[in-house]
Length: 439
Image (cartoon, rainbow, N blue to C red; front, side, top):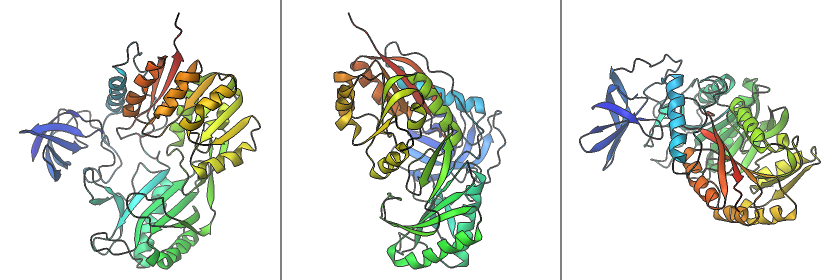
């Protein structure tokens, strides 16, 4: 199918039209004409990948990826840096345009380069022929495409994942096949420490094949010097890759990462930033927005990546985290920070009580993709401090949260986009909001 690309949709794919259908093509640029390979057709859309570029964007850049036009994980793979930044800034600007008086978002900050930034990976494992393939789903499908040696990954991570595939073949480890209901290795997750270069690996498999995969885990630890520890995770089914029980097989249970001078022990199930360079910029901007003072309440604290830096700027930090594993890690770390109090609870359920317990200068939120819940907004309406700092993981999240914060009296001070995920459409933001004084 031949199509002329008019613009990009929100996930970064090139968008055009053929007849009455919208056509979405990963890695195609506005202004280009491409012949596409169709991956999926629905009632109103055709989705696919570039088969051949007929008329190219003159600003296309060279890149080190061998999987262009096959893997769809980086829809902006060949975009010029200025083009990528403009696209992301426009996404943020669109998200806030309905907020009266909202400032124009600042320029997108991009720490580090466009490749080698990802320090956490989730790979799907299939064996369509004789060789195991570690890769990702093609956009809009359940087809897995090989992305071995992905240049977006931190180099130690890419090397270890290649070693996993080689070992799976050498040891003839069973690989899952949902179509035939065959059990086996289904996913690989791995995290690399920027601080040490050490890699922690999790092999997700069914209970029937635990012994075979466990033997592979032990062999991986022995063969790869950078692999600090390996776990087997029992497959919980569905899309919940990390939901199953964990069997520690070899080496360390956690590895250490350092962000803004603070050490964090990260386990195979721990939620932690995938791009440490960009995370440091994100947190610096958030701290500048928060300022200094006597007391700050931090909602959705995770394992403390922002909590410990905030403890250097405020006399007291109240860190709220609901997830039990993260809350336990947070509480353990708080032993080193006497001015940090940890509350294991849902943010919305306890926020009003925490705000009422003592005068609070600032509330900092780093919520999941769904954003702030109604109970959190109600607590801010009842007892909110003069300033809120909001970290949003996506412009759509920001677009949902800002009108509700405005409705309870908070005006937008400034918005800073941070590019944590180069070559993709994702862009995070830090927004400072101040309570508007009324007569």
